[in-house]
Amino acid sequence: MKRKVIFDCDPGHDDAIALLMAFASTRLDILAVTVTGGNQTLAKTLNNAKRVLSFAGVECLIAAGCDKPLFRELEVAPEVHGDSGLDGPVLPESNLPVDDRHAVEVMRDLLDQATEPITLVATGPLTNVGLLLSTYPHVKSKIDLIAIMGGSVVGGNWTPGAEFNIMVDPEAAHIVFHSGIHIAMAGLDVTHRAMVTKQDTERIRSLNKKVPVMVAELLDFFALFHHTMGFDATPLHDPVTIAYLIDPSIITTKEYYVDIDVDGEFTLGATVADQLGSMNQPANTTVMLDIDREKFVDMIVDLVNTYE
Image (cartoon, rainbow, N blue to C red; front, top):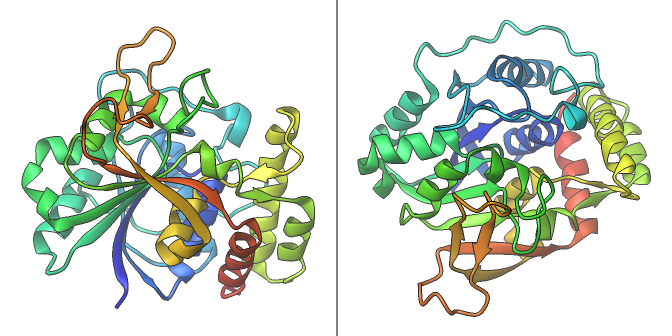
């Protein structure tokens, strides 16, 4: 039976590839794509989601959510993703419709109607998900897992202590991690091992079809920032969440209690994993720590090859 998924994202190069993987997988049933501000403004991330899905011939329920964090101003990442949030490939504008409802209302309605558990995937700031759980707590019983890209056990990539997605809206992340719903966390510990090399990109390009070539062009641009940061290959963050749902056997995990620092001077947005057990709290998070890189790349190649 397919796992039913609501995919919340902020495309973003790696979000775009994760979306393509999710819709191509025979193990996932994507009920809706909801969008938040994050890598770029909401107007841009929504446009990017529409353009990628339309280019790939995917039609689905799409809804726009929060344009800023719950209590803070939005911080975006043009140095990583470009001014559009999806610089690189030339993608035509899309006429895919956007639902009139707010993304949180779409999530609520789908969960209220669900007759079996739904998994939430969140590859951007957790604003939409945090708002959903705080506004409509009754839906928690319908959610079996929240799979996120965000955080890390040790260190950050936007500040010394915090990963970008959590740092953008730490209060929303705090709500999610205290929701009582189990979390699968693909943080920097694993995503910095999910490396795509130039040779891998050329392998995708050599499939010589429209969507794989576009994916290779996304990887070309995404690699530019990471090369300036000293990476020999490109960490492909967001697709790790989808890889985990499709085949968790390729990922090494450990159970931890994880909390969010919401007021630290130097550690705001840090995901604090209790490795020592000193907080005396039951584990609330499956933390991904390592990945079989070759199988991960093979999965990407196989899934994007299903498109024209």
